[in-house]
Amino acid sequence: MAEILDGKAVSDFFKQEIAKEVLAITAAGNRAPHLVAILVGNDGGSKTYVEAKKKACKLVGFEGTVLYFPDTISQDELLAKVNEINDDPNIDGLIVQLPLPKHINENAVTQTIVPEKDVDGFHDINMGKLAKGDNSGYTSATPLGITMLLKYYGIETAGKHAVVIGRSNIVGRPMSILLSNSSETGNATVTLTHSRTQNLKDITLQADIIVAAIGQPNFVSADMVKPGAIVIDVGITRLDDSSKKAGWRLAGDVDFAAVEKIAGKITPVPGGVGPMTVIGLLYNTLQARKRQL
Ligand code: NDP
Image (cartoon, rainbow, N blue to C red; front, side, top):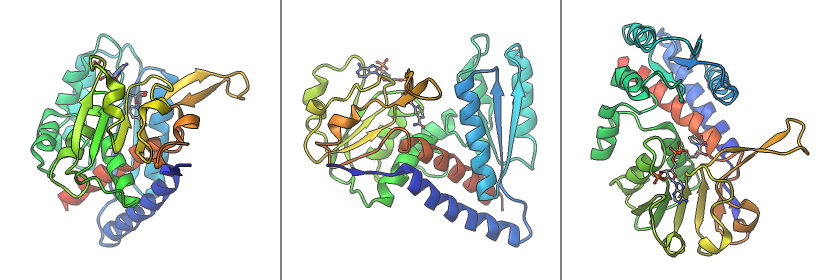
């Protein structure tokens, strides 16, 4: 049976570490880091994510603010708000929860956030720095959180074959770059796969590390996994489940029950990558504050 990579427990560890750094900052007479999240509209899932981020801020001693806007807000109004925050010296990090309503161009919004406050790491400058292995920028929170989890468990990536499934700009692509960069949590040989990849199973069977970021429940089956492989499940999909009080449950991209019997180590859903994504965001916000001091 695979060892469970417990993202919840590891995130609690990192929260304590971050809280210690916040205490040192405030004890020296400086204000605590301040993260602002913008939420447009009423999507239940997005609201849950944003509230979880705010709660995590409070736990580590950050100031956390959520700004709610109706989905009727115009793009210009939203960009004006972003610019206001860009200019506010008392705010270190700004995230705009995606997706945005269709009349707002997401790229226009993410590129308007100044790179220095772009703690989600979506700005072209931060993506570019990541691609060049320059760590003066910010790395997308989910891939960053995954590397922190791998490091915590002492999982060696150097020389390993990592197969990333999914090439989105927020997960798959930055994950593939991080794993391939010349760094402590990189130096892997990386194959980035997507919906046009042929013979995916032949490729995943060669993987020492699989990162699944697709959004299709149970996509990675046991016959796709080499015995002993490390399996990181990024996927989060809500599935109807009348046996649950809420009427739904969360499912990952990996058929956990079957793959757990084959893999060496595996992340569960929930309690794996999700809590580590929050840590990646807190870590970036702490860096943003420290870079100002
Ligand atoms: P996107 O929809 O942006 O990207 C999905 C990727 O999966 C695409 O690159 C797509 O390929 C690829 N894909 C789809 N079908 C297949 C297939 N059959 N075979 C191989 N590749 C395929 O999703 P995200 O990256 O934003 O998110 C992925 C999942 O991760 C979602 O479930 C999301 O909810 C979850 N997520 C979880 C987070 C966490 O904190 N745990 C954070 C962020 C996301 P193509 O490019 O060819 O279309």
